[in-house]
Amino acid sequence: MDTINPLKDQPHSIPLRKLLLWALCALLPIITFYHLIAFPFPHSLSQSKQSLVITTSSSTPSKEIGNASVEISCDYSNGNWIQDKLGPLYTKCNTIKEGQNCITHGRLDNDYLYWRWKPNNCQLPRFDPKKFLQLFKNKNLAFVGDSLARNQLESLLCMLSTYSPHDLVFSHGEENKFRKWHFPSHNVNISIYWSPFLVKGVEKSDKTYYNTLYLDSVDEKWAKDLGQMDLVVFSIGHWYLLSAIYFYGDKVLGCHSCPGLNYTEVGFYDVYGKAFETTFKTILDRRGGGKDKLDVIVTTFSPAHFEGEWDKYGACSKTKPYDAKEKEKLEWMDAEMRETSIKQVSIAKKEGHEKNVVRFEAVDVTKLAYLRPDGHPGPYMHPFPFANGIQERVQNDCVHWCLPGPIDTWNEILMQVMIKKMDKLR
Ligand SMILES: *[C@@H]1O[C@H](CO)[C@@H](O)[C@H](O)[C@H]1NC(C)=O
Ligand SMILES: *[C@@H]1O[C@H](CO)[C@@H](O)[C@H](O)[C@H]1NC(C)=O
Ligand SMILES: *[C@@H]1O[C@H](CO)[C@@H](O)[C@H](O)[C@H]1NC(C)=O
Image (cartoon, rainbow, N blue to C red; front, side, top):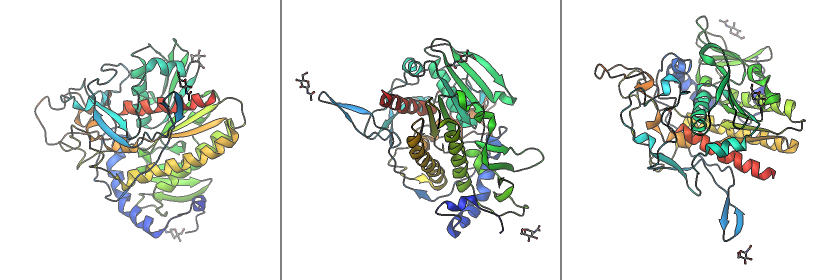
């Protein structure tokens, strides 16, 4: 193939092993996430069976030892879900997207609401909306990404609204893909930007079954506002599983899951990494030289839990979390997506540190999400799916999360990570 490959500076360009695995899983994701992520209806797959052990550590909370405050390392990413009588901060909330409003849609079991994430070596405090708003007084926060970014944002809005009301001050686009809320009590603004690739791209349509990505430039729909942001939270991934053609400049790098097109199958992990690289580089170029601090957070990949066909009764019908011992290893694809983003964050972190203005961090939720097969809407993506009795065929969403639900924990971790960062500034 005579295509140039800017991905080749990565140590493992496209080894045979990967190619084979790509070929193997090329067809699976497309049937899974194709419709669900693009909104209408979910499809399913049983995921690749290989797995990797995950190891990581992130933030450092302080712990009182005697009366000395000592920094110990806390790894929020590994732990277990333990039962919690307290339950969620909220039950009703008017910013929940229809498809994730499980309680209102008649989901009867409610055990899934009574679990708390317990990291192995430390505590994760309950979300404190007042403290969160104080922390971000006079600041602009932005969530950028796909429907999981929106899912996380809506969780945050629900938790904050238990303490302080907000106004929707901007809304634009089909399905309100661009919105902004204002919290007058603390002059905090929170926005959402639809950008499922982060880089420039054209989403698949009625005319093309594939997405087109331009890996060398960021999507200006969010990047044009970079100058006003104090915190940006990126959450992407699932759209990368879909069929796509990848451009770098005017050269075609290859494609993914693209029968009938005369391009090399290159899978999606390397391009996923490349998208972060381009994004972080652009952020450093535009904000690295300034005086105003910018925090950049990446929420790592959030696994789906289809157990069989997407439209079959019981596609994700578990009612309890997995025990961490029962599921030590992530599925191969989830692990690979997670690692790709974490690697890019750690590279950017070093660069950002040198410039000292832009700070990068990963909020590593992959493992804790993986342990929550019970937290998805499943058939309750629609109201009262069994009003006329149980049907064999029913649409299921086993990708997004019920609100309230496990995704509230992503924001608890986000809050702790930000508290620690801000402490360091003092
Ligand atoms: C701890 O506190 C005690 C009494 O408050 C004080 O006498 C002692 O010097 C303190 N130790 C340290 C290490 O600060
Ligand atoms: C938040 O948005 C409001 C309304 O758009 C604006 O008046 C305010 O200045 C913004 N706050 C910050 C911190 O930028
Ligand atoms: C596919 O691409 C190769 C290399 O660019 C070219 O030689 C070949 O003719 C193409 N085949 C078709 C069917 O277009």
